[in-house]
Length: 473
Image (cartoon, rainbow, N blue to C red; front, side):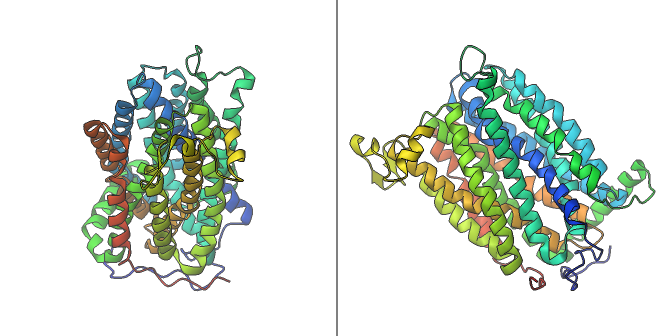
């Protein structure tokens, strides 16, 4: 691999992909996004708003402080395993050629662990944690192959909107799964009663069904890279050599290396928010699993719409500026929410009992029937919606920027490094939050470390150079 000092610019022809080929048809590109539609229920419903609060408050047998800590440890183990495996898997994928076999294999490996969450009764801490670790590991490895398809199927000047469309589909899948999940009691799957918390446990099998069904459109419709006629063993050997060469010469890709480090740090903070905000909200306001689920549903409806708008912004102003702006506004919303409790709003506005029991004029009566009956709860929800507006663009534009920066012929390898840097410290934020929570006995103190990660990543991203992109046509 010859060293270079700059990142390749995308093709100047708007009807070609970043790899210089013809883009896939519109139906094929839509089919690519359906994989994310099927993955959304696991990453959003299970990991954030339903199973995470259930784990913290009930699997740990009503010990939410230890529950948040142990959830952080499980996330840390999963992140470490993903970090160790992702680069080699990506390098092998580049040697092999086709992406769809890797997507299918690793997605299918994740499915049993999603289904086994049904058996995670209160007290079954090891079973629940092990299922989360391995389901997350295999599903994330499948996403290496999925992400690596992006530069080869989208027109160069439409890659931002396709990436954003994938994230929007992820949220849309989570919305549909939430709707089904909330309707489960009507079909005899009860909530938090003597049935052993069947409803929150059902989120795992529900995510499994979505992952199976919505993997099929991509496998059947989206075109794939041709196979290079090499055995898996040969690809593994060559992939390991290629990875080692890439790592040794990563200094030649200084701009990419800086981006990977920046993204590693701010992404760690963003994912930590996803992993813990459901637990924090449910514990702070004593919400039931159903109420926390409704809160999550409102957030992802907002995020789904904003992801598309973020993709349009990405294709207009570039990925880097879209990410930077999103991080600023998201951090402000998060800070406000961490300072909102039943007795105060945004740290600085204490409430009397009468004020706390009141509602926001106009909007309050609409939120109260959903389980958000007090002023601080309603403020928490509305500020959370504001944060949701910016989380989608921050994530989707991060993937787009990697696709713009990756050298041709090494896309999967660099997406493997992308996954590595997204996970190299992924064990650090959840573990640090877990330790800080356990030491301080306060959830808010533990979550405060998130701002350190986002702030450092933001600062480094200021120095990343984005390749000149084609004018949106």
